[in-house]
Image 1: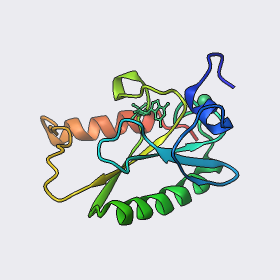
Image 2: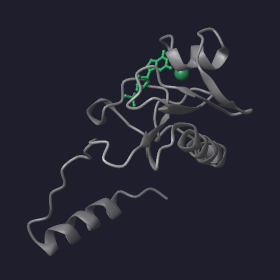
Image 3: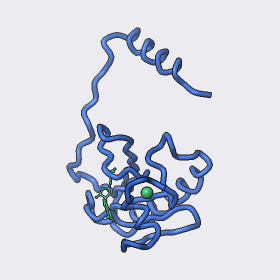
Image 4: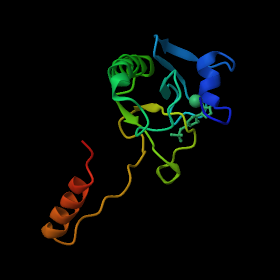
Length: 140
Ligand code: 5GP
Ligand code: ZN
């Protein structure tokens, strides 16, 4: 349990209402109260983990199963032609609720939402250097 009251723990316990879509032993899905588009849903583990680094990989199958079920249902319910799955880790990445969650965002042709701008590496060697630096920090 987190030290501070966590809004998503309270939702998972049923202390705060939500527009619930899906639930199993480990996972809950409900609508985001400030949707990018109506139907925007959140999938959370019922147990509190702050972010992906804390999240146990053993729970990944349950989360991915829910993401597929809820993603398909949101597409059909909204008439979306596509959807994004998004998961933010840390303030600088846009995380505002520090109980891990995955966004399911229905998308429509020409809906005008832009992804972030992309850049490049100055040289192919810079790219290889970055790959080597990341590899040197990989944990077993
Ligand atoms: P983050 O920015 O942390 O990736 O996303 C947090 C999301 O949780 C936001 O999209 C926000 O609208 C949603 N949210 C925050 N508080 C509540 C709440 O009490 N109920 C629901 N349904 N969504 C919430
Ligand atoms: Zn929590």
